[in-house]
Length: 385
View 1: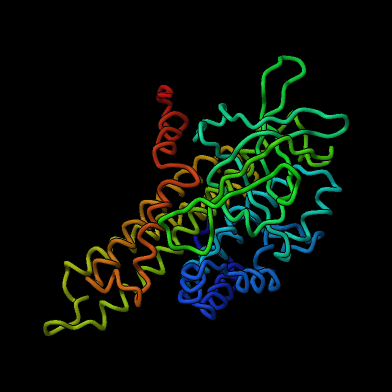
View 2: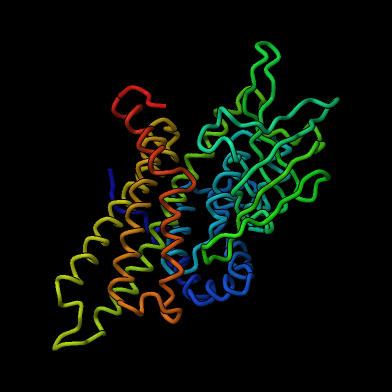
């Protein structure tokens, strides 16, 4: 087993970090404060092929794996220009369609994922279901050759920047009558679909939405893959989601830590820079250790997933997401504390990361549900819920 990334992966990291650095954190903050988006960065990253590194070459992508996409995500975050929709559009949606879509669906959608011209949101969360996917109430019923979709989703990222949404609904099993999950591609301009922005106390250029589906009529090919394999398809997308969320968090933590180290080296109050004092140095050193450990577990999860070992990847992806969420919160806190009052001054750009980093412990799956998963599946303890 090698713990050193390939030269190609390392070169990809350097290129992605260089692109993010060209725009800089101020670009992201300006977009967030003005109610805008980081469209220029997304478009350039797509044109350079960075958003489609995991898409098969036959559809215009790089032919790599989720590990390559996670590397891009992390490096853009480390440059202060994290792209939240990378966690969803090229990771979840492109992966599911690539693995389970029909040949026609792959030809239709994957080239757009490859060059970034297509953005697709992902909608699973509902107001009364939370992490319990068995309580989803969004349903799809057959209507001739097509489908009619009805339901409500909440906390769906970047709907306003997407041309379609991959919606998790439920269909009735013809044999048992029980509802089972199914995945549908729904255009954001479809009749009967509405979405409304949720006001958040998080300063970011990426918005959250409530989505309402009121008898949305869909053609037969809106169903992704087989209606009988949707649960497998769903989890095939959720493992990359956790890997990407971990990479996004690690990148954010690296950015905050780099800012803190730079400040600790140059800020002199007594005889030496404040970084010489253990009260400042130790929290930063601890943040470095925790971020590196989270990064290593994320790389392991990605390697397992790209090798086709979905079961082992699920455990590792959850562990990576947990570790990264904890690490980024502590890294941002240490960075703010290192800066003192300047840590919350707009000039330094760290205050905006306080809420954003805290979100990494909640979404896309809470730390508590990850601990439930580890307790049950890794340790064999009785199910508690």
